[in-house]
Image 1 (cartoon, rainbow, N blue to C red):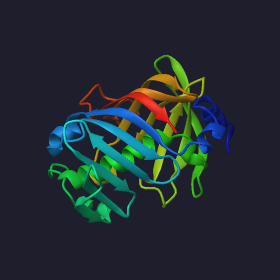
Image 2 (tube, helix red, strand yellow):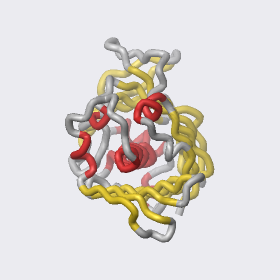
Image 3 (tube, helix red, strand yellow):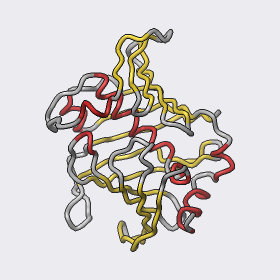
Length: 238
């Protein structure tokens, strides 16, 4: 690993803690103009649980007696609380091919997008140590009066994500402050995604707020619209 990735992993809790985890559960809120555009707010307030070591996640909405299950690029499903499948979509990423940005989503579209994105967010930066990832430190970036070191990451083809290559910005403490990408499944514009208010949850250090903004050609972010606005609380580690 690079020294930057080593520093980042240590700042977020360390590999020993991460490798011992079997499940992470968090209360999560999801908002922003993307979900307004897509006509989907089913997962606006949920309990979110992931397997840290493979692309698998479950959303349990607060207001509806269902759960939404994400199983990587293999399948997404909507189930009853007892596990009876109500709807299922195999190969869920394929249905986004050629989809216009304004096209409305059904719940299975939402399940796939929020499933892979949510899983990526809770596993970074530890994810970058998994097989198939390539990392390279590139020139630093100045923002908010600070110098942030940057890691260019080429994702493993086995891991669903926004786009194959993304750039991650870390502050002097090694905490992740921003990531740059574009979401292929949304046909989105370049995005600057910010992380705020990191906190320590039983040794795991995670942001409790995220906000995704348009990224301008010079690399700066525009003040709006806020594509995605995420809040996290009550992290539980198993």
